[in-house]
Length: 129
Image (cartoon, rainbow, N blue to C red; front, top):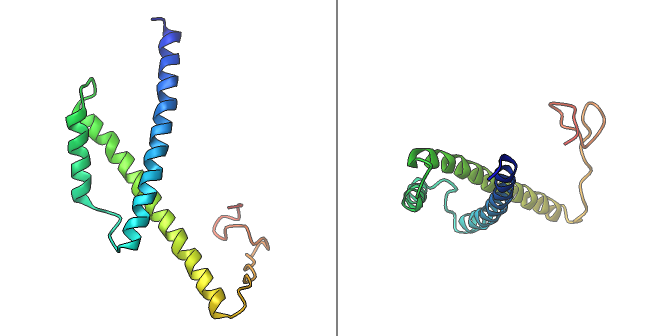
């Protein structure tokens, strides 16, 4: 194969990886919702050990097990952060709904203005969120 053909192959594989990682992220979000509903922690070290063992068992090379494990450590870190961010957003939304219900109107509360005057700016940076 030529260099261009190999690069095209890598580009196609990268697109497949992105698709699979997105699918994995959707599954991780669903798991996060189930964990929240059953009061389970997001971080489960025993489950992560099982994942690493599964990955090493499926590895036929050429990546060494340790390198594949490092890749999966990063993937799991990102998925865990995704779960936490999603669940935090949900808790925040539930809190806002609870506040609206407790005020009896269900109307949306006015947004607080930042020092710059734009309700959509982050106070720390002054940049749009």
